[in-house]
Image 1: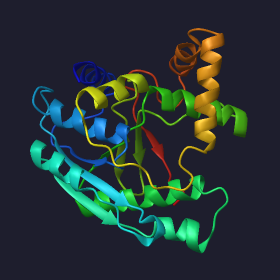
Image 2: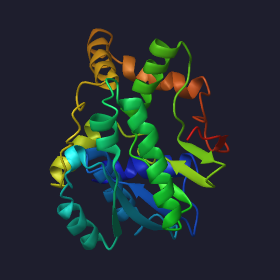
Image 3: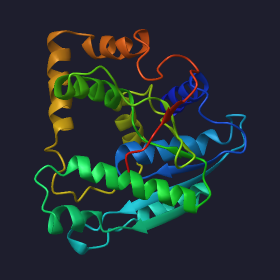
Image 4: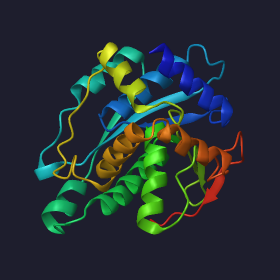
Length: 249
């Protein structure tokens, strides 16, 4: 846990993510990344030197019209003295049962964002912490290049003007293997995704491609991430003011 916490603390300081008095909604899907994010932010309250609150918010997509069991996450939040909220949605039914989307990920992402933003405002949060990490940034960089012919990525800090919310990504400096190791060593509970498209997405293809290329060209992943910083892509410079972003949804 210490390595992950150290990387999160470095990112928070580098990009000036958290200020005193912040009330932060932590998006917790139940996957390893979001649970590790919650654990790190809960632990950092004790020695970060910044007075902030966190509230864990889980969206239940209700795939197949069935509620998911998040009781282990509730127990974890009780242990860490973190308020925990589960928001039922109809995302799963709309995408797979009603619209029968053949490429569901884009629509799902937009619906998730909208629901999470609304929940954060409902619980009087001014920031949302998301579980994107180092590998996610590299994958997004490559996906934008391959699929859209543009150089870009999500940024460590983004301000959403229409919702008056700031998105932060405290694990942006943590590689996925560090997160996986932390979850395993700390025996953090994981809620397995019930999404029918899980593991067969464009992102999974990109992840596999980067892994293969990194074996053939050792250090490629680190050089790609370095290109984000050296190229001043989407707010990756130190303590750059958060970019104002107009929402599509």
